[in-house]
Image 1 (tube, rainbow, N blue to C red):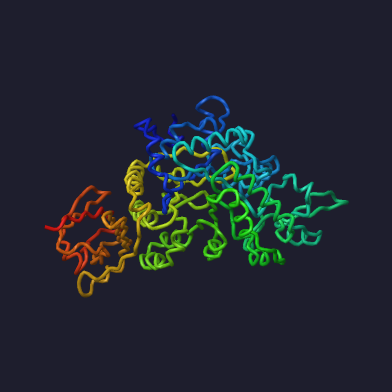
Image 2 (image 1 turned 90 degrees about the vertical axis):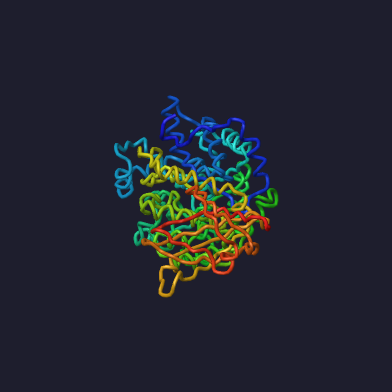
Amino acid sequence: MSAQVEFRPSVDEHAHPSMAREREAAALCPSLYQVNTRALLQELSSQIGKPATLDDVPDEFLDHLAQQGHDWVWFLGVWQTGSAGRRVSRQNQEWLREFREILPGLAEDDICGSCFAITRYEAHTDFGGNAALDRLRDRIHFLGMKLLLDFVPNHTALDHEWVIQHPEYYVRGTEKTLRDEPQNYINLGGDDTPAVFAYGRDPYFDGWPDTLQLNYVEPSLQQAMIGELQKVAKHCDGVRCDMAMLILPEVFERTWGQRPAPFWSQAISTVRESNADFLFIAEVYWDLEWTLQQLGFNYTYDKRLYDRLRNGRAQPVRDHFRADMNFQMKSARFLENHDEPRAASVFPPEQHHAAAVLTYLCPGLRFFHEGQFQGRKKKLPVHLRRRPNEVIDSALLEFYGELLACLKLRVVRNGHWSLLETNPAWEGNWTWDCFIGFAWEFLRHDKLLVVVNFAPHQSQCYLRLPFADLSGRSVLLDDLMSHEAFERDGTELSERGLYLDLKSWGYHIFRVIVSDKD
């Protein structure tokens, strides 16, 4: 296979049935892997010499994801799109400048239109339709994983059938609003009979010109969207809801001047009437994460943690982990996704490692993005089907391999997590405040200790340990990343803590092995 299809065949072809059994009990802190469906299929097409469908996604690719320990696979962009969105993407000059910067040798065929300008919630005919999608879901299930797909509640494509059949489903404008805000409205009628529609948008930016805004003030639209969700739920195990906060009553009113009835609680409960375990993940910002969690979302994006990690200061990151545990367990932690810059492009290598340890060894959903492990640096716009060739960062790939092995441990999938306190190593030692430490414990005997010096300089501290059974025993600290081991006196650890002296952005992931009492 080409290096562009980023997987390695499994070592043991018969491993997956047992792996499925190991993950029968749902993890409290699962792992999600996002796949760019269009880019993957484009690369497969070039390899097999014909247009690839979802049936051509190799079993080895899925098996590799299962062996890495992922519980969920998100296939981004499987739904049907149309010619209108493709035309806008190929004509928008601002977007074209970005496309050319990202993709050398850009051709018109590389621009397929945004995968969020959806015309129908049916798997794209180019990808094999719903039948191929269901076969992909079944293969994912066989490996003990589940399938996540997109749901876009705020808008549709310009050429969605509802534009003709149900224009009342959309926010409408007037000739005046079209004149005053041409960046936010479009006339889909003629000069004699104008039909002005609003572009989909959020309250802080101009409209997305390849979409139309759905009108949640209209009760029949809400019922229609619940019906769309029910259709989607027949083909997957959960949905990632694009910009989910835009249709909250207060946000919709701020954007459009009208307050709709609530949508999410009814929609989620309706879908779960026939599938109680159906998963809802919200892309959400503006400190509305808790609001959406209370409405029934299993997980909400944790963009604030990402921003604080990028800022590179320990205290705001540590304070972030003081949030209520119910909130933390429902947070989706990430270092990149299709909307954010590539982690390898914004984090220097050592800080990248430190940030990854903190992101993926705290509680919640561990959210990874295709290409993240290989160190890709160019973010692919959702309008493109071909991604640029990039050199694989072998050191980063090795790091993530070690980290993923840690994340498969039951103690960090189903254990109890706590944030640890640090103390100065000596009087006047100010660098103690640069440390962030976690403890994980499962059934008292399975212990893990995570500590990071989240600073660009060497730091020292004493780390307070929460384990109650250390006194009078010998304690072995086995570093799962460096494969070094350190023996310490348990009584000293209990009374004073663990002394640490770490280089800039240094970290340990210790398996804590406590000896039996004499």
